[in-house]
Amino acid sequence: MTPLLDNFFNTTILAQYWPSILGGFWLTVEVALLTIAVGVVAGLALAIVRAMHWRPADIAITVFVDIFRTLPQLVVIVFLYFGLPYAGIQLSPFAATVLALGAVLAAFATEIFWAAIQAVPQGQWDAARSLGLGFLRILFLVILPQAVRIAIPLLTNRAIAITKGTALGTAVALPELLGRAQSAMAIAANPSPLTLAAALYLLFFVPLVVASRWLEGLGPRRH
Amino acid sequence: METLQLFLDNFADWDSLVRIWPLLWQGLQLTALLAVVTLPIAVAVGLLIAVLYSFHHKPLNVALLIWIDLFRSFPVLVLLILIFYGLPFLGLKLPSFAACVLALTLNNSGYYGEIFRAGIESIPPGQREAARALGLHPLQVIFLVLLPQAIARVLAPLASNSLELVKTTSIAALVALPELLRSARVAQEQTYNPTPLTAAAIIFFVLLWPFARWVAKLERDMIMRQK
Image 1: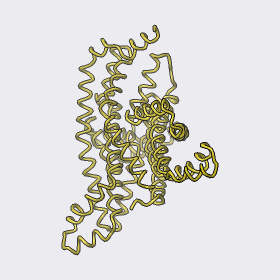
Image 2: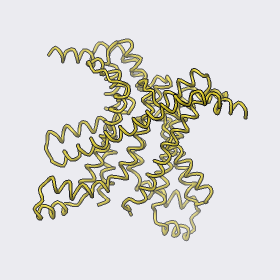
Image 3: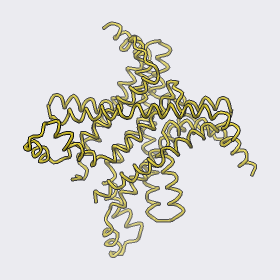
Image 4: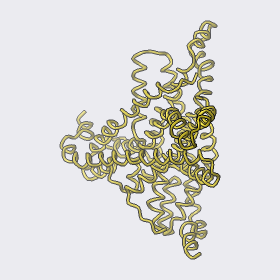
């Protein structure tokens, strides 16, 4: 038992690295929240643009969505950070991680919102138009409130899954939770910081995963 | 024109590509191997979890739900780092390939487990009762009656998760396994331009795109059915 305790729950080492790892935790939370904000807002905006059925925009959005829902998140992060400098654009690790994850979430969110908008029955558009409402009012007052409700369970799952990608920031030296834990582990030659990081990740994500299970139960029944 | 030429020289330099192609090809093969080995194992473990759950044994089900939510909550990279860099302190040193297979399998056992479980639970109980009344063995009920219907219902998340699994193999690059992304990074240090990275991204895109479109269609159909 002692080797396990000494290696994975070493209180001396934990006390020493606790402040650094806690700092990493807050950075992880920050990146996660920013990713969700960027991804959901951009996704909703792109879905609204698609609803306007303007051909050049449709094509551009489809290309964007297909690229970012197909490429692995890590490939996008590495490309933004190690590739773009050759085009004269040097992003910080923070910006590269948020932009990459935000773009991936935006691609999925666009798809989900767009499908949800289409899932609202055509009769709703017709009825609203016959009441004399204009396009934007119909979209924002009639269609979107219903579409968002349809989109929420799928969107929540996607957002959680992509937010877990914050740990990929270590690949571009972002000093978030996993990165801090790994460097502490290397210096201390002891994996206790990693145990702590794992516990903090669970602290952050278990409530989200449990909440999404509950949210799914509330969603429309499929049978 | 000049900027375009400069851009092409950097991001799509043919000579660089020819020189580093063997490296990329090797990386692609390793990526494919990792996906082909992990996918069936992860599906099998997920299926096992769902089948065990379907017996509705209370304490067992609590344990299974904890397993599912625990591994769905763990970022897969954290799991991989723990297995690859943490376990050696307990005297268990796994090669990077095995560590990746283990991390991806544990992580995805949670996802597949939940997908299959939700699918089986969504089948009306009358199906199970009718099959039992016809004298089928409980295992026959699950595998011949419930599962085929369940899989049809959860095809969209099943396909989506499989695509995510294949994409996630790229995290192996972070434990020095020379799969496609890692090979591209190594090649980049030889060419001093991002052409290998562009090439790797294009390879990923071309191979996964048809599958991604199919998954998108399945998900769209699923949302439309909620009308």
